Amino acid sequence: MCSDPNKVIDVTKAVQDVILRIYRWDSSGTWGEDGRLVDYKVPVPSGMTILDALIWIKANLDHTLSWRAACRMGVCGSCGMFIHGKPLLACQTQVLKLHADVIEIRPLPNYPIVKDLVTDQSRMIDAHTRLRPYIIRTGTPPEAIAGEFHQTEEELVRYLQFSYCLKCGLCMSACPTVASLQEFPGPQPLGQALRYVYDTRDEGFAERLKEIDNKFGIFRCHFAGACSEACPKGIDPAFAIQLLKKEIVKRAIMGCRVPASAGLMPLQQDNAVKAPNVPATPAFTVEQKK
Image 1 (tube, helix red, strand yellow):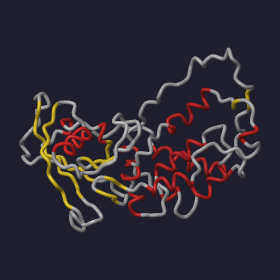
Image 2 (cartoon, helix red, strand yellow):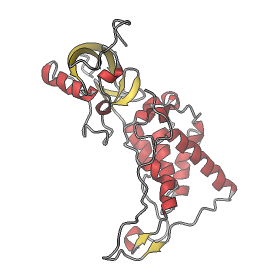
Image 3 (cartoon, helix red, strand yellow):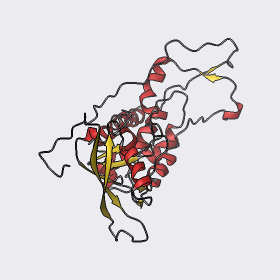
Image 4 (spheres, helix red, strand yellow):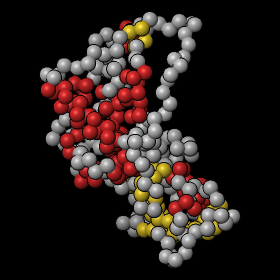
């Protein structure tokens, strides 16, 4: 969005003034029932991120502005916002690389607003919790297990891509089914369900199935793919959901027979060494929209 459509931001210039048009709302009605957009002029040097700019505004222009952030390095997922028409992490989005002299920033869609850019992500967290995002063993209780579960490199690679989720919620804000169906779990919980279904140490498929496969569950996903375009870690939750659908059908056809779970190895010895071929972080499977 540019106030002058013929103006082009010069990213080589030392410092440039950019307007951040930020949505303001609070429960006291300070900004009206529906909130409103407020302009803040920010001097932007090369490399400044949206999060840096928000911090500058709070320190120099308006200390009442609220948002959520923590790590500032794309690891915690706290600073998700709707920036320039896209769900993005504020700490990973450079102001000048948006090539606009007016940038609109709103809270993430599909979540209730707490204040300004802060959203209530309880819907995602509750759905994530219901799908039991941890390894479930149906036999021996965890405290009685001695040793480590054996897992091959190939078995690790199968779910590794889906284990990098930040819980940032960008995928949920991009999903049209989340927007239209309150009961739908959403791409984040369903993608993480696959991560554990694919983990050979886990035996909890049947326990998760009632949350995954019901009238508001996984088959309400229409494979729009917006979640994967929004994901800052390249997890590709849309792909994960299709794989999970396949797994549900396959296991139903097999008569609920499931693959054998990982076997136990002896307790780690003092002279144990790290496996030489542990996979690196997987490459993105969906190209991110610029």
